[in-house]
Image 1 (cartoon, rainbow, N blue to C red):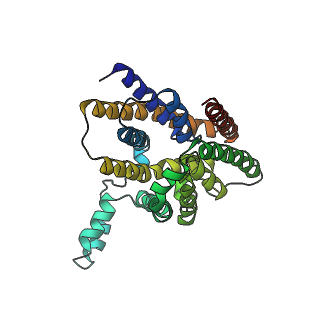
Image 2 (tube, rainbow, N blue to C red):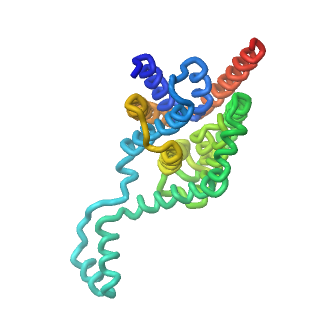
Image 3 (cartoon, rainbow, N blue to C red):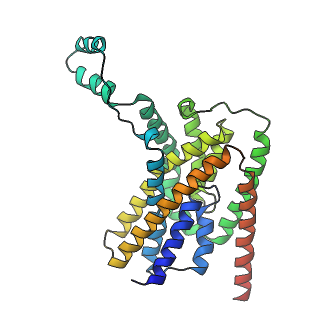
Length: 300
């Protein structure tokens, strides 16, 4: 195992942890980073690594928001409620008792909303994922997506100043709004779009506050990113060299730690500011990607 390669892994984990949650496109940053810091591994493992280190980022969301996400609890039923349950038909009693004693209704509803928001991606995006990666995973598409969504953030925030959010908490988030956010998530299959960016835009347009849009985006990432990582692992197989196993572990750990910092920063930032600064940043990064690769192509 090469120490220099380990440093590259750490840097990639840092980039993943920051850009996965901020609406700036992790793909756009990874393309630039990969130009200068290329892992000395097989192409197949490199593709796996760039997807699977997202598991560290997912774990950060689970740790930070565990009280909001864990759908089980332990509560005692009142004697009156026990008597009411005992009057139910025998086959209903265990289910009702379990649901009322060990299940948190609001959190289960939140998870159903998260799963509902995943439906558009499963139906529309997943079947064409390999084709999109093959045809659109290039610097031109990434740069254009960065710029277009940067402009979109600026204009949407200006438009948003003239209206008041209708959804100010996750509990008030309707299934319809969750589905709208899920439709916007489909757009993120285009490299450079940013999954968090597209879903946050969808949430704001659907009437949520920036905090609700961001938090629901974090939660929506859990099944989406876990599924993407699982698919990559299945395709690659669980046959890693010792060095590859270390790279994956370190990359996930670094992405986990940095993601915690990035998520806390974003939630604190949007309580006082809007997303306009991220819009300008995306435009600048998109132009940088275009200029760099045009010069590189001309020189070559």
